[in-house]
Length: 419
Image 1 (cartoon, helix red, strand yellow):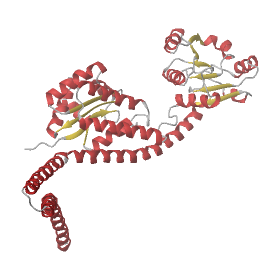
Image 2: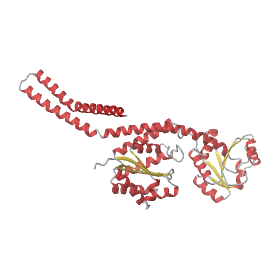
Image 3: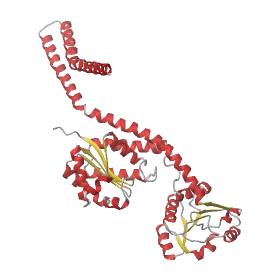
Image 4: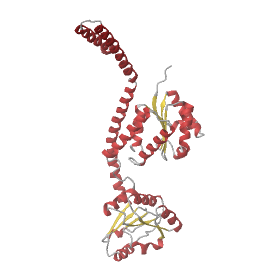
């Protein structure tokens, strides 16, 4: 029985499994090289790539359907799981569907946050690990290079990653629109939770260098500030520091406002009415709504940012539709290349046969000329025999193709007549 070699994408992600199960099948970076060697040895698959992030674990490989079942069993065994527990949460794509899935993943179309850019680098890292482990063959080399080209095209020719789709990123994006460069802007962050940490990360990525973190618990402020080379203060120290801040972003669990209108008004006087940009990401509010009435104070609430995020998500959805079309074209081009590889041996054999015929007839013609035969007749015979023998195989193949086509047409006619 002939085993058909196919391309597979096997995985589990945020859409198919809870985080508790995803954690169990995740691969630590240091595990990947050993896992690739063990996987290819135990299943004899030809190619293997392991992609493992916080939201997905995926195995890309080439082999037979039987080997695909062996890979599933290996994955469960490697992580000491019951295959029956894992199976309902797995997806398995094959051939063109596998190529499309890989390209969608690399382009950010399959991410928890649509269009997030980090996944592209993670796919590249997975490819490099597999290449270093020797589990990338020419077929997968072509597949991943095509994937990277398509993902770059999606990034440059669509707006898939152009718009903020989290309130933290939206806040930083607004700040950049107002101040341009953030390198010389002083930022006061009030709170030390996940949202403020994400804001700090976005600020740092966009060049902000002068950060101050204020929190009710000073130790938590210090812990967060150390990650971003920032200053740490307590909430009691906010009023004197407020006048130094060009940007104030707050997100705490306080039930009462932390920054009042009077506090901001006093800070603006010290600043000689130099504008202040304030963003309140907390519910209930950290900054009194009356602050918006002050001249030179520009206050945005979480509701303001949510509307921006909703519009931007809509824009990303439209960009995703454009990206899907690019991915289909890219996957089709890879499929065409793959199909051609199956004909390489036939083409090589045909060219070798043609070369043998040419050499044989040329040698005969040279002998004829050497015995004194008429050169014009020798050349005429050479050209006639050469063209006939070179055309024999292609002509036979064309006739067979036309015959098969005629049979198909007649079969269709007969089927229609039977209706």
